[in-house]
Length: 67
Image 1 (cartoon, rainbow, N blue to C red):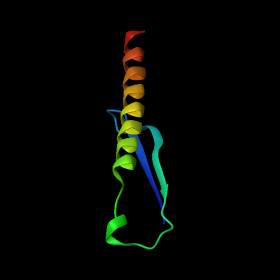
Image 2 (image 1 turned 180 degrees about the horizontal axis):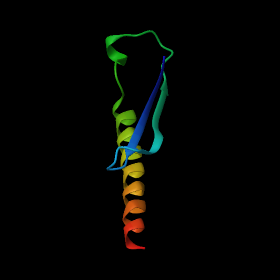
Image 3 (image 1 turned 180 degrees about the vertical axis):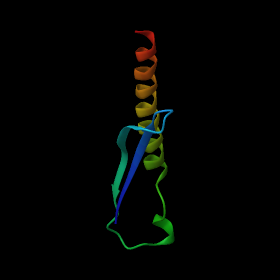
Image 4 (image 1 turned 90 degrees about the vertical axis):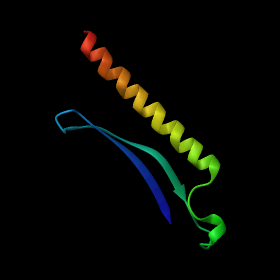
């Protein structure tokens, strides 16, 4: 199983501004209760990637309003 998480950022008018892949994992082991969902390390990396992408876009938008 391949899991891909994308972050979609839209303008206030609803136009898509950016689609970024913020996480991707490959699961090859047999599914068991012990390996359901994301690990703590995977969850932390996902949150870090979301924050980084979001902050970069917010900075870009702020800079556009200042020029």
